[in-house]
Length: 386
Image 1 (cartoon, rainbow, N blue to C red):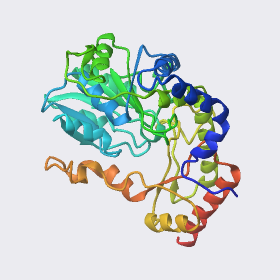
Image 2: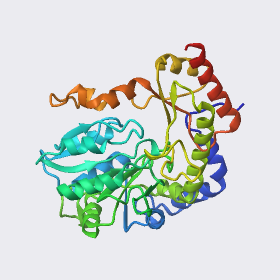
Image 3: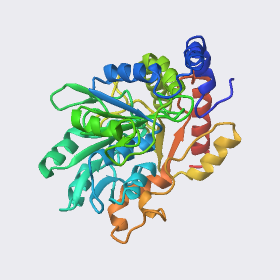
C-alpha cells in the first residue's frame, strides 16, 4: 500500500507535471515574475469559472480577508460577527484592523455559523458578518444575506476552504460560494482544493467600485505609479503561482468530485455506527447525496461520542495514518481573542466539537486500499474500546 498522507501533493503533481512545468518555465524565461501575463490570465479564467465580475489576486488568504475588510471602509470599533469554530486567521484580521470581533456558536450538523446566534449578537455597532464555508461546506447564505439586508450589514465570505462548492438557493438556483456576499476571500495555500506551490490568495466581488478600491489597496494604495490615493499594502500573487493555478483550475471540479467520492466511501464504512457522526451536506441532507455539490470536502471530519479522541489520534499515528484536529481550542478561549463579554453557555456546540472532532486524510489521490485501511483501523479502535 502506498504511504498514506494527509494531503498527497506529490502524486497530484505527477499527473499534471507535463503541463505545469512548461507553464512555470514560461514565467522564468520571460522574467515576468510580478503582475505578469500569467496573473491576468488566471484572474480572467477564475472570473469565468466563478461567474463573478472581479477577481483580485493577492499574496495569501489572510491578506485577502484583511484587504476585503479594508475595502469596505470599516472603522475602529465596528463589530464584525464570525464563527467561533474556525481557523484563527478569520478573527485575526478583524483584530488587526482594530475592529471588534464578535464570536458566535456554530450549527451542530454543518459546523457552520449559526444563523440564530448571528441574530442574537447584532448590536447598533455591528457592521459585518463573516460566514466561513468550513471544511468545504457552503454556509446558510440565504438566511445570512436576509439578516444582512434587514440590518444593513456587509457580508464577507471566507471561502478559503470552499472554492468550487455550489450553494443552492431557496428558489433552486445555484451560485458558487464566494460570490454571494458583498465580497469574499480565498486562499491558494498548497493543501487547499485549488492550491499553488507557495502562498497565494484572491478577493472576489461583483461591486465595481469596491473592486477598484481593492485593486489600489493590494498595490500600496496606487492607481497611478507613485500616486498613493488610499492606505494600502503590498500583496500580490506572483506569476509562478498564477501559472500553477491556471493549470490546476480546469481540474478543480474533477478534484472536488474525487474528494466527494472518497467521502462517500468513508461514510459508507462508518454508516450507522452509534459513536460516529459522519459529515453531511446541508442541514436537511441525510448524509452525502448522489448529486452533492454543496460540499467540496477540504476536510473529512468525524464527530465522535464516547470515544477518547486523543487516544485515537495517537493510535492512528502509530499505524501510519496521519489525521488532524481542526480545531482543538475555540477562538473565544485563545489568549489573543479572549473577552469578558463571552459566556461559555453561548458556545455549547463549539466547546463540544473541539473535544470530539477528528479529520481523516482527504485529497485527490486517496485510493480504495488506503480508505479501507483507514476506516478499518478507526473502527477497530473504537469497537475495542467501547
